[in-house]
Image (tube, rainbow, N blue to C red):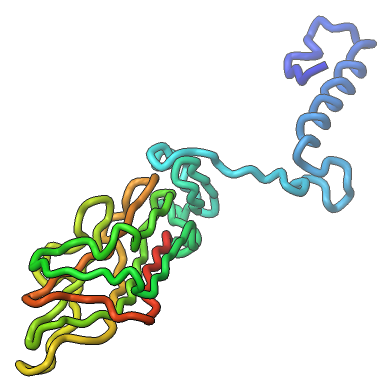
Length: 230
């Protein structure tokens, strides 16, 4: 039988009392023993291995859950794990890498630009990453030169069609060392998204522009774009 707290009743036969009591004890053992050690001496009451379940919820719904200290919650939509500190939910291991991808190029395609507005370096020099809703860490390493003295090269990064910075000089670049010399060298840009993009496909493309002349890619140097979701 299943647990029945109403049995035995006052009108039950005395001879049936022990049967009802044993039946309820059996129901208790079956229910509690499903996820606890029920008859294990000093281990009685302990959870069975794998039985301590956490709350399965969503980012929007977790705010309404009981935040008693030590509780755990896993959000199916963001794939993030949280613990309650008594007042709020705190993400566990927020810096865990979720996804990453990279691309390398040796400049053999010889990308170049004379644009004074930011333009994509190359349609082939990009990373597409399917993310879970975390921030992106982006690192660009690129070696280039300007064919005209006293002219600079600046770099930017585009995420899903939008430049990550609206500054005229982007994330910085290669500056001409003097009026008689042209910009030349390797630029290293490392940045993190200010706002985490929504889960889904993210397309990251490096961009560049010049203050004059033509920016060209130095041959036989390994250029790289690395994108990591955290």
